[in-house]
Length: 218
Ligand code: MG
Ligand code: ZN
Image (cartoon, rainbow, N blue to C red; front, side):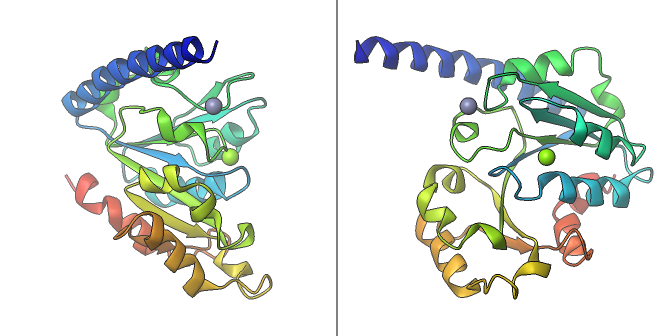
């Protein structure tokens, strides 16, 4: 039985990779930079995105796609920024795939956007395997999750282009060991850059937004 399951999974990923490749070409043709935010549940993706959209909209042409198993709470939260926001409700599927993203973008004029953020379903496992055609994959982890998250979920850290350490305002309260966290990130992905933020306090946002300034300066 096992080989058959492996085969089905491989086909699924192959199909996803093809679709992601098409999406990536579409994004490039439209001149839109796409950022895929991945993390465990509750790491602060929505809070960071809320602060990001508030800082960029309406000066920059920015939008967001939000994936969740159920509820459109996050999309409604992000919609308050005034930026275009769309929800993808996945039901029982614990990650976004390229097909869902393509369907959600079907009637969107990508040419009207410079920057599109995709908030993936909160899950540190399978979002690592599903390319969404993004330009940049960002893994978030919060000081409240424990310093060993990178060691426990190396694949998602390994596939990321940037790490964001969130909820810095709580670091002292949870006796966060910053040096250990950095060591663990470097152990699984040497050279991965880490940006520290507190979306609640607004600290570190300039450093985070600076990652995109080159891409949206036109
Ligand atoms: Mg969220
Ligand atoms: Zn999944």
